[in-house]
Length: 245
Length: 286
Image (tube, rainbow over all chains, first blue to last red; front, side, top):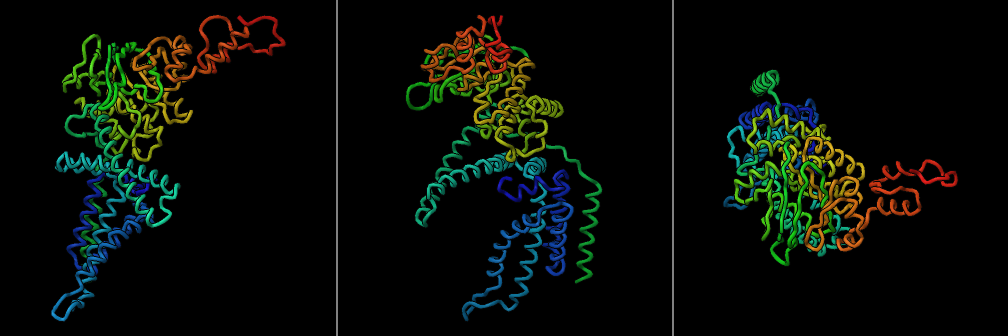
């Protein structure tokens, strides 16, 4: 385990060997559906489907998925509050349709987030990046994302090691010491990352890097059955939403 | 892989501040053989390997391949890197990709090879290093020893004539050291010249065909038995005498070993020791 639960889930997912394009179609379709259909019942249905797929066939751990949803939920809640509060001549008050607006906003956004998380918890970055390159995203952007993703784990290890060493020497025994230790920790990781980047550049140059970081994409064949089921499922979702509405 | 003769003459090299790490260092890398570069921490082993790989430009002296001087322009370095590969000590300096296969494919793709050839080379390199089963694993979920061997595979996939390894066994447990050395043995069967730096004199004695000791900013090169039995040189280089030579010399003094080269490791010593208790013996083994 690396400490990034979403990444661990993606590598362990039962959908790990599915073509990233197939999963992008499914999750992209769910996001669009969540945004276009009314919050009730459309977005609610999308959320249910995304969570069911993640916890069911994709075998993402419940705890991981729940933790991953919590983070956007905090942002959404803050956003929803600003949407339902009105500032008028009489000061601050609730908007007349506050409950409807908050529900709609939360519904669309949560369903969309669940669909994006379905992709994130089933598709490792190393599958997505070559797909982005093939989709025409500039090579420099993909290369930077690739190195940042890799260095993230290396620096997280550094961060943990330095923090443990500080904690063992009472670096976090008081609020004041914690502030000081956190600052030193940030500085240490910054200089380490700089040094690491320099040495990594040397390592890559030694292996013939001249312009970009081209690597062999893994062959993950697309499944016609999966694609057909995706299209049929999305159509069924829209129809069900219309009937219920 | 064909053999190339890599050599350095009169190298003066160092970093921004302070006196040079190497000052007049010369080395001949024996083609198709195993060379261990020995030295204490900070003695200049890595600097020497970086000069040989072209990563560091020496202030004076030269590196040659088959007698031709190594230039440091882009074109010359590109050609040099197809022949000579350096594997850095810390695998995290080398592994940049999230997947093992993708990382190992990086070098061969930079050689401009077609995808089928790259896939074949990646599979071959991973098998040679004994990490074929890790091909589909993410690099950040590998152990340190596994990452070291994947980093070596990344260089091996480029099929260099000379492979330079900076402390490939540092930080590994005994079984990982044994696996790494076995992998290096398989590489040599593929005609590669393997150079590794280490401060482990026991490993150097049992593994190397030749050793080079970095001492006083220069290099002393010779056979493992000669150099690792030279107490004065070892003291100057802040290294210990290998235990196999110490024990072997004592056994010889006791009349338990006949003249000739001393065994290099435990297995060699056990093989020449008498198989009966001393009290049962009337003669020294021949």
